[in-house]
Image (cartoon, rainbow over all chains, first blue to last red):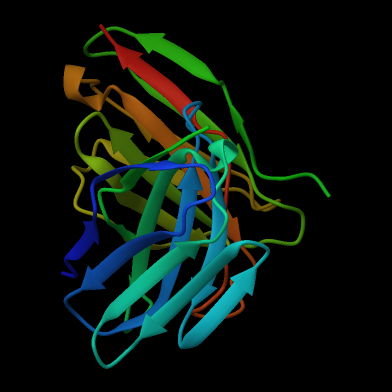
Length: 110
Length: 114
């Protein structure tokens, strides 16, 4: 069973700051997902990675397969980025659903 | 393009009753996943259906069951409800084309067991 650890658990920053959220997992995977959950509960898939780096707007996600580690970066953070960011992995065999980290609660203050 | 839809949005039941939750995937998606987000426990994988078959299930008792219909919509049934089944139940769909497909999440059903 894959163990997914996220850090930090909580992060409060000022608008405009560069944000980094980290995710580590214990067993080889087929893919890693970064998800965003807003207070109402709705979840949005931000990225799905199996190698390298992806960028979408102000969001950047990287993954290092050898080190079993991924990071999510937010540049020029904005209060609307306030949400829970969840890292999730799918096992090497791909025969099951996602295993989730506990999430990072991000608050961006104006 | 319509996203993943779930119904009902909220459901209140009492202990021992049965709950039925429904999910309609994005058009063209054949895989449906069910997840539970209980307070303090984070998201946990429940069930995966693809092409009408149950492909895998998470570490949940048999009273959690479901099915996928020919139109790829899905039902999650929870029998003999217990208080700790109170949670947000999320459904996600994907096109099932490979191990690395993106999953698209629905808005969830909030189940409260009294």
